[in-house]
Length: 491
Image 1 (cartoon, rainbow, N blue to C red):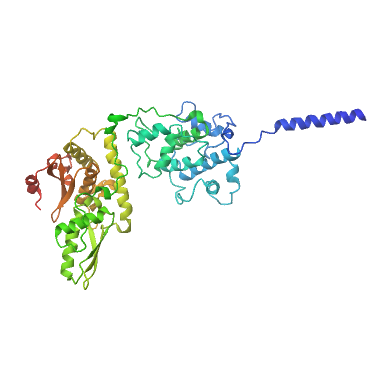
Image 2: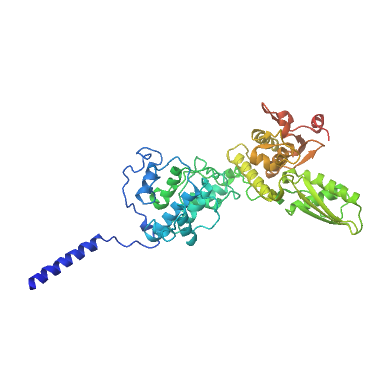
């Protein structure tokens, strides 16, 4: 009996030991040690075979337990990744880091009838990784900027150290690399984080990111696997020029609309001359306002107010790059208070966002021409103006169907749609020249508007609209004298 008890105790002990050996070590909490390959890829995705582009990345996602592919048995390397799918990947990576299990984070948020991304989104929002900024976009193809936004927030800084911080900061600030990203680009800080953390080096030797382009599941897989495997992170092979040689890498980033206003900005509460009204308009624009308050201190007639309003409208059109081409006037004739509110036809409440887009895009064009060497520091103003003239003509067509209330009358249309009429052409061109520091204004007659610019100390007339000939760029309308310009359009 005693021996039997000993044998039984021994058996129980053996079983207990065996059971203990089968229990995996407890996952660490909030640790990169949880990023381990728990499976071995053996061709589970029919479109991911050795030698396939992004093979290593798609296979790694399977091995880390972050993807089981699509329902048809493929990974979908060439398919566009949606915002919702990036949220799913982010939720799994965050959960794997936090708990050691890719699915445990979203598990507590699952409900019947949900879209696949919803529990992961709820988990990330609860964890403070994401907010509601992408609501309504989850089923749409993700842009590269949106992917950057999600991935940059997925892991804490300790798990995603900025190993390339100094290099990327210098390269970007000097506008030698990543030149298609400016501070006006959506999620530009998050895009730079991807470079600094080694998750991206861009798509070419200049580090181009293409923030508004869609991204494939294969390309996304490359960045995702670099998040969980530090050995895969990259360092850009960039040579950053510093010192005097770097002066050619000029950026207009940070330029505001107010920065573009030069000359007399003296405010007159009761302007009586064209010069005073023009100065008031410049004052208003220098304050980034579209409202001009006047006070004549006594009775004024409606005819007088009408004259002031028309003079002010003509003055604001000389700044056509600012995109104001209409005015609304309210006044109290008995005491001489006049309020002029400027706007643009066919824009309504959208004008502020149109102006933001226009300025940021113009800055991106300016910086791109510098970064690629089309514009250089040793060029004359005439040469720079000619380069921008060509860019305008190459990137726009005349909107033959435009009406008086068409959006084609403002610079936004050229930068956004590549289609404009004369005031849109002139506005966009003048904006680029002013970002270059070239003094210019718009001159108009009853049916046309063009540019007058000071190039290397001399005044020239430039008509980008007429220069945009159907068979190429017509330079006969570039840098005309006043007499030459008069022959084409009097004023």
